[in-house]
Length: 459
Image (cartoon, rainbow, N blue to C red; front, side, top):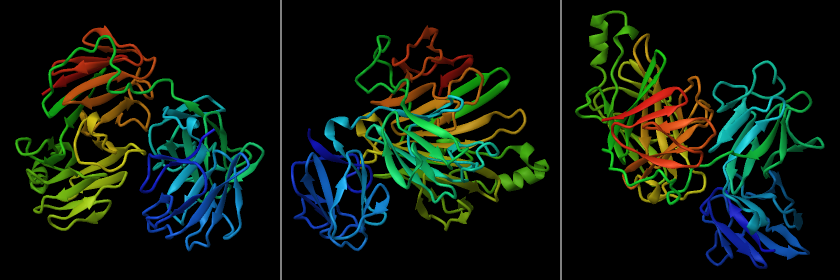
């Protein structure tokens, strides 16, 4: 059995290193496992075989070494169980120690055991009772859980869970309180102790097919323009998704200058005169989103006001976007909520769009609600792929009748747009049903049905 370290975070994130014998871990280039991270000492820790497993010896490092979130005594060997989670330095790189054949890539879910509700975990999320949590617990029924209780990160076929300093703790079966652990498929975790909810790690029913795994209906499609629209209709409800597949995307009040046209809704304002005056505070080209090697930057256009997470930007200022952010434009005329969806195991790379580029950013989504009979609006910067569903974790969230929590997924491959079915819920493109796991191409004029919800692709 070959033992290895699968790095969840840090400079080696996404890589698995086999351990053949003694391994010196540190920042020094002569170490066996080199971690160029400020939290790691030059010679930080030693891993060495012991019986059928390994032991860890912290070399009296400044930041310490941690096993399952607990700091180990310096200078004393600690026996490591397979599947344990190691951290080198306070806030330093995380790695899972296990047999290399056990590291998987399957999509995972959390299943709530009292009612069977399934929560997809496509990326990092926070579990708690707060409205800001991606997996929100019941405000009253889950009172023993904290507002922001648990951070969850999928990695190598398991979920890395971190207690966020909760009041009542996080537990495994047997009333074992944990700080930070890597949970394999089938593992159970409890939030808050007695009376708190139990969740089970499970494999998602379907995953997005890889770029080379196209269904029988997949023929060579014509390329879509770099910017297009998805028009959504369900009963009397209407919506529009403006999509841009570019490394630099402008937003502003004039569609001729900006890929994302963002204007005021007059009914949001007191009268037409007020609407005209305040609408002028949004520039025709107000700002830009720019794809970088490992994220997305917001660039202020320089003429009118832009506030990011409550902070007024300087003219022309450029700032990286966090996972979730809030954006105010002009004289607080337009408010948008944004989220950057990332792949946790892809390293920084050249800023290019398309699955082939393997960029860590999957997409950026901006959301603003409609006013009365004005259609709601989403803006999608599609880098590689975007999930569609009714769940809060879906990139394109469509909380409409007949839409499954994780219904389908869009992907960009070679300048062409594909849609894949990732559930048993009905999906059809141009009148032809799409089987679960199948991917078919879209073109301008295509009509997609997610259950009874109609989505039309237009320029």
